[in-house]
Amino acid sequence: MCRNGWCKASFEVTDEDLVFYDKVSPTFCGKKYAIPPPILCPDCRTQKRMAHVNRCHLFRGKSTFTNKEIISLYPADRGLNIYENDIWWSDQWDPLEYGRDVNMNTPLFSQLTVLIKEAPHMALFNDQNENSPYVNTTGWAKNCNLCYGADYSQDCYYGEAIYYSRNSLDCLHGQNLERCYESIDCNDGYGLLFCQNCNNCNDSAFLYDCIGCRNCFGCVGLRHKEYCYFNEECGKEEYLRRKQQHFPLTSQGILAIKKQRRALEVKVPRMCFVGTNNESVSGDYLFNSKNSVHCFDSDSLQDCKHCSNMRKAKDCYDVNYWGHSGELCYDCLAVGENASCILFSLFVWGGTENMFYCFECISCSDCFGCSGLRHKKYCILNKQYTKEEYEVRVDILIGKMQRDGEWGEFLPVTASLSAYNETLAHHFYPLTKKEVEKRGWLWRDVTDEIPKVTKVIPAEQLPERIDAIPDDVLEWAIESETSRRPFRILKPELEFYRAFDLPIPRVHPDERLQERWLLRNPRKLWSRKCGNCEKGIETTYAPDRSEIVYCEECYLKEVY
Image 1 (cartoon, helix red, strand yellow):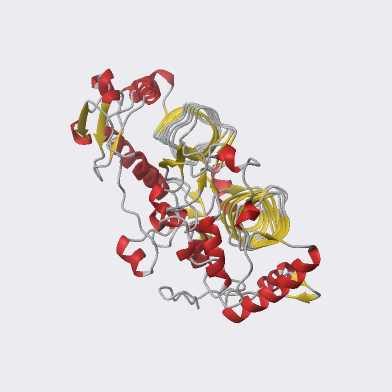
Image 2 (cartoon, helix red, strand yellow):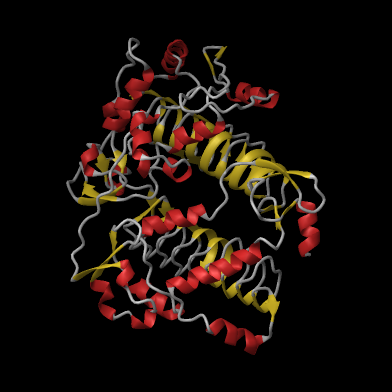
């Protein structure tokens, strides 16, 4: 049973799990230090890791090195040591200056928390972007705004986990998208509006679970079709006539179309999970994977468990984000690029190995409890040792952690540099302010800058049709329908909405992102029966949901 004070969930530790924990248990001074079985359930372990990472909230501040104005993951009142990225990566400062001896009379977690808060941090986890100051966890992007995980993308706005995409707005999870809007889990698409779980589709709107379709509207479960309107093939002229009656789109019109498509969705069978080319896997959105259990949004996994958003990983448990590749990693977040034997760490990448309880360390090996190191070996709390000294001291230190009940546990949420409602944890495990503060965690009340505008208008007062929106909307601040948070429309956005006859959004970008997340199934597995052969299946569709859910075999027979 989970030993969190607020969670009593039961969970199983299998013989295979024990074999894995033994495999990743390190050896120092000839003694193997066993990784103990976890005391928290998989969800609580994930929540604890994710509560340390802010991906989608940006703040204005100043570099503590140059005093220049910067955009950062951390608000100025957090009192942290934040450097602009080019300074952080430079030789103008030495992370070993923050080194300190281990105090054997104080828990290591307390000492490591102090080090992490004192050592410098890069303002954003970005690399080689152009004209994209308001992005995070993104590299090689150009002209992107408020995107999070948008590598190699251009002219994209308000997206998360979209790669190799161009001129697309408000999309979530996808790659090779162009001129797409409000599309979720779509790949290789062009001109898609309000589509979900679609691949290789073009010039279509309001599709769900379609492959190889073009010029389709409001369709579900189609394969390689053209000129279909709510699953009816109607020919080009009739299709264009029916489609055009919906444009220009309005907010109310969009809701009506979604309601009509939803009525069709519950009639068309769907597969129990999204994925292809897998063998012995469980989870959702899995591809090219083998022998992986309870994993999500991942590709090319082998012998992994409780992992998500990983690419090319082997023998990893409880790891979220990255890979490319990762091996023998446990209880980590954002580790990859040839990462091996990384335990209980955050943001460790670049040919790293044998790293324990480390934060934001690049191209290092054999370090314990360090923060902000680059190209270092044999360090403890950012202090340099010889190989022999390192072995002896870590041997003693792990023994201390075992006595203090810390060995085998991730850093507590109270050590996080971010407020809970700024972190990934709040995406997947949302809590109220009262609940967060009851647990002793940090909460940050949202306060938006007052934009310098000529007019502030409640979203409800916006004209419904885009052809009634004047050019000076670019000088307005719009108050979100749901929260009254102000936001602005940018010129490339307005051009996009006009090109596709779309209405101006009425909800703040942060809230739109959260709404898209809610359209995806939860990362939770239920047992239910195939709607056709009644074979037992494991799926992210709860048994009481109205969709017709088939096992993979029955589904493939149905659609091909």
